[in-house]
Image (cartoon, rainbow, N blue to C red; front, side):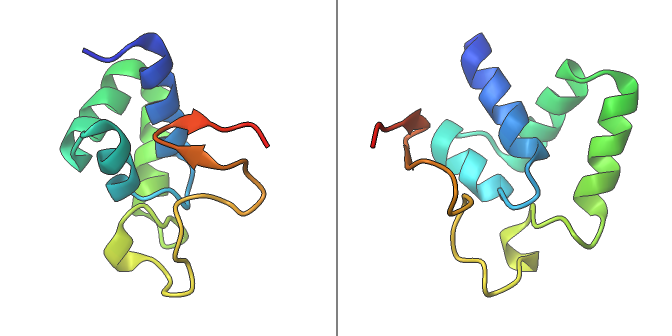
Length: 90
């Protein structure tokens, strides 16, 4: 069972274009199908449709195999260091 904080973080990661489903799987052990089910359950219907459209468009990098080969990380270089979904202090 996921906590509210974990669910919020998964939703946040799912909305980020550059965070692939594989990163969510590494941190939370959820498959793509489980993330899709969580998003369908937690989002409003309009938000759900927007998210699914966004995931399937060309600019989304949600699938590691479809990612630009220049992208070799799960996070933006401007974000703080994230380890095991816990933000470390600088």
